Image (cartoon, rainbow, N blue to C red; front, side, top):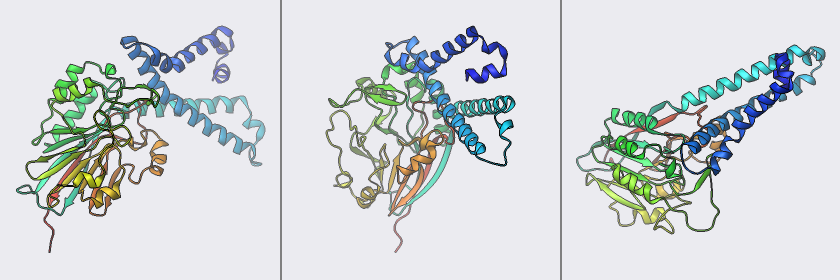
Length: 381
């Protein structure tokens, strides 16, 4: 970068200018690490937010500059290219400008896109009777990751999107928090915003792998493997005050007609749960002539859930990869990385999530809530 700046303008060849550039670079590059070790407070929030933006910019700097280097190597081996011109001052400057513009466009677009919540609509037909209910509008949201990246404005936009769908049922499929409860900006205001959700049959949630008390850096948690990881008690209290019913490996009968089961996270089941129930144990004792809906943070055990009689499995966790090229590689990890999949008689829907983890960007993916119109139709003879 310093070489390119020096080529663009003579001023950047001076020691003082190089020192200033280096200091600025080190400030941004170290912000994430500095924030990790600072005690909770405004200063920590500032450094963590700067670091999360920097992480995304760094990702696209590596990708863009790496791609430029690959192209340069290919062109160097071509006999049709004038090698003298390829190594010229002009090509060096122009290629640097192209890289800088590419990094800036991807980064700025990613920041803007991450703050824009969309509504994705699905329809699922369940061949069971649900009493007097012929259909139900279910809103699925997941991966809010409330904390340093996601605050009141983003959650307020989400609630407005939810209420615009006039939902019968609202479910949050985990990762409501981003590990550190102290990272919440104005928790009481957030609670008030959540209480504005209008749902005929209530608001329910299950926990995900980030709904535990643990230090987090660049979206990844630290704290060792010793001891059982649990949610912060304040998280549980937050949901209760917000009017959200947390389902801990348990079910409720919605409108006396539809089962809703909330599973704990498969890797970090949380307080009071040593081992979560298997899919077969979930439906044991249920009247399977009634529809069975499950909220599960990670889209796993799809075959087992389908075989156990689950009709609709609602998940999150994947973020659809969040940032390119993650949206491509995540499909190698999950049978249904994002969107809709029919597994036997079961419908599986995975949302890309409302918030972000790590880089405060979305490139190639969308922040979303899912509006699922569930139609109940008795089996045809």
